[in-house]
Image (cartoon, rainbow, N blue to C red; front, side):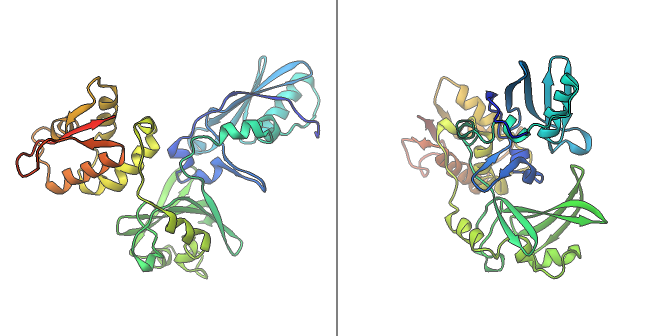
Length: 335
């Protein structure tokens, strides 16, 4: 139906790192000719049709669709959840009025309203890009850089996906770089079903036995000048105290500075939550870190150096009044 709908935004929803920057992130962004914006989990809108309110809410699915967006439409006692916003609102409308009028879910979500789109685009750390390889779309949802020429200077943290069939079923192929490894993972129905590891993009894609007429460099999306420009622009992440409630930003910083230099499963989030809530902005670094490490843990100089570098990147300042030669006690302050 072509009529323009009057849409009220009830809730803008949230950016969820596991969804918007994860294996299924391709399904959580809208790429139109004029706009690129996220499908925010929990976004809720209201429209009135024939004097009845229709409320649309973005949710996740369950089971095989738990990483996919779903659209719940409610009007009175009628509630329908579908993978399509158009189908959800049109079905509920049919239940209410016994007519098959079709309404645009795109409009009902407010995605053609510039004021609503301005709100949905706020506080986005990174906007994914797409590059074409023949008839395939490579969706690049995370950037990492390095000095490795064989990787076209991509580095740890780089992630891209491509949709292709595997074992005769539609699947998502995720190409990513982790430290010194190039990895291809195959997902289907929200589950990781296969993983391949190599030393270069070309090597790891050869191991998959898929899309053999393309190089791994192409399938990683690394041959495109768009990707090259993003990698060139990539910088060491930084933030301020105002960003400490943004888990995605802090995780990027932790992954970049500390993750490879410390033990697995350290509860680094508690460290920042506890410090931010404290009335005292000054901490003694090792004492504060002991709270998130096993009893009796001993830090290496390299490990402490990584933590100090990260803390500087998140806006903290070393205020130790003496040199490290005089004492190992280090005081850090946040402003």
